[in-house]
Length: 400
Image 1 (cartoon, rainbow, N blue to C red):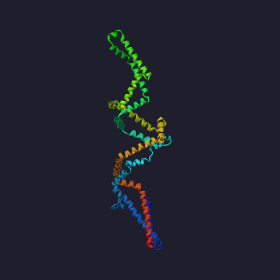
Image 2: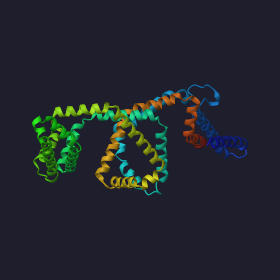
Image 3: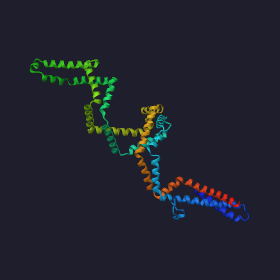
Image 4: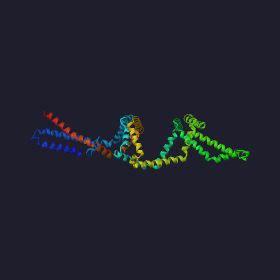
């Protein structure tokens, strides 16, 4: 474009010289000469204006030239301010996000057959795997464990446990757990039969032991306990079983409403989190999860072809077809992005400003000229042609 604009200017100069020589013989060439003369003036003026944006014309330190290199810091600050005021504002981001259906796009992507979107999926999977492998495992694992422990410490678990237990009781989902407890009680009784007999023998007086009545007493106690466990397991209306169910219901209520019970559970939770074995268990979970995520990311087609793929495709169908879920996901995404704009907009603005400040004058000149230089050369071409037309009009008026 520079060659075209400069070539047009040279052509106008050649026409001007030719018409200046031939005008005495051909008077009508005065109109052409006026056009070419004014076109040279317009082309030179616009060349000066365009060049003055990026550098000193002909290397001369003319005032108010090389505008961009001299003002690059101010341009960076102004651009950053423009981004912050017009783009990185939470209401603006939220308004733009209202027209973006992220949930629908995610649903269509998850449902895409293996031949569609494979390049994007493989690229994203490779990026995820590289990120997980490139991050400092020890530091990242520490961050994950700290985040998990912090979230669990902040959350009050007793109401959640109480609500889950109450729901299980209301829907009779506690019955298998209760029956398992009764069976465990029966097994414990059989496993500790010698201990029970020894306790009865030690507490019986010498007369009972002399008459061997302590053995009969122990047999009666063991038979009675076994009978109770059998009746509890077969009779849903057994009094002991009903009392156990009532105890579970009371526990569910206390976990939700009793301050002492809730405080006791929170204390147990904190003691458990402080235990080193729990930390090792969380670390093991992290290592297994990290390895599984890397393996899945390295082979996304296998993941999409298995049971997990069926689940993901089902999720995609739900995201695309269920208006309520799609609206909820889009609302969450909108709030998340708006929150990021509000929280990190200032950092992004500083990044733009500091990056431009860090560029030298030659770098910013080259980048801006590369971005908009083609259009600026059109200004030179238009200036040449428009200048010529204005000169022609003025010559016509002067002649008339």
